[in-house]
Length: 505
Image (cartoon, rainbow, N blue to C red; front, side, top):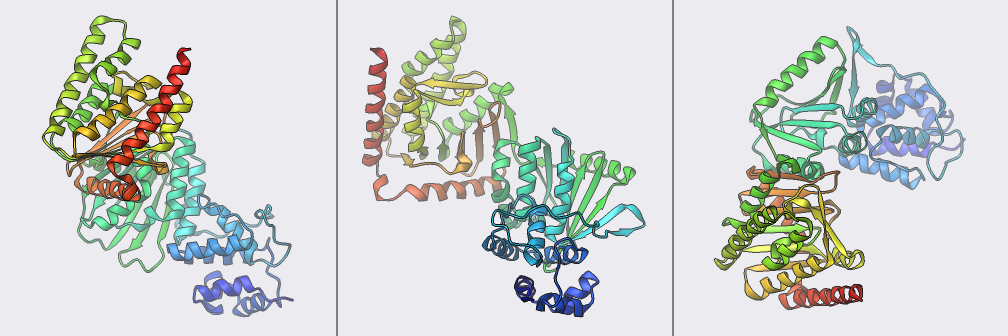
């Protein structure tokens, strides 16, 4: 019988001996040797292959090892959905087993086998999982049972807690939030080391700016004996993941469903949550006035302004153009008048800041400009026109904004505009502002209603500024000079004018 090269490869990669595998799985060392040599077939439906796969998952506790495993599976024809750890486990079982043909588009159903033994302490209210993949797989099962709209609370003893940003866990948490609409609160102890906080922002930036996961911080101990993550599934379970501070040993996950323990942990979380600082202040458009004042702070007070926008910016419309748009939807003279005056307050203050040399940079998408021509409108948050919900600005209004961009480029050397072919996916249907070292705000309109997230958290502002600079760098080559940008805008305006003229006929 042929040698089991896949099992041999992974044992060699993870620097194991046959004795290591035998001790971890409770199998005889000679049986492991026979599996590798091919003298004994490792069957897909056997308890032994389950135990070996579970052990390998506990050892895949670094990004490098997880990526290596995924590469081996993909090279063998197995799909590897990073959001499903159970899928990865099934693929590992297929990959190291020797009965049956390989299937190019993924594994078939695995015949039912006995559940692997759970390590129990005291009673059945507690079970333990070892290693990042095994813990993530167990959490995935828990997440799948959550009712839609349920609340999950996470407490991280420190931002050094690496499991929270592990790809296999983070992808599954994001998927659960997107598909099940759960509400997630995360309270994080800040260590003061921005490297760890940066990783959290990088991993969950999309959920941060959409308000789907709400983050809160407090200043924790500078050094912990161990790092812990508490996942509290209200009324059902508490999961405690513990890592060593050194981080070389695999993490341990403890799953507890004792009713009193879960209830008291929920109460403890609530007490800590009340005294933590929200990472973002989040406003929906029930608070249009608050959103307007945030925008006023961004545009009309001193401090360098950086904007990236998957739309066009009404701030650059002339007063007459803006009032034309308002009149279309505001027949009441009193309402129309105060909205016009509000825009004048904004526009005059912004012009004053620009005249005084305030640096202002903006990034927009060429793909979006073409879409505006084709669709004859541009969707944006209603707050820009002092209303709730979404607003479809007509083609004439979009054309007036582009003319305003050109006017500002000609008039203010401290204003710079960058037009990228397309924006990163993270910026779809949103507008991001970074105001010097003072604040960051994101107006996201990818959901059912616009949401504005605003923060003055220094570490957060720093990270978003770095993110902005990385996007700016992508398109700031020699062809992005002012004359080139103006020529693009004029060409788009010509196309818009042609459509407008055709529509009048």
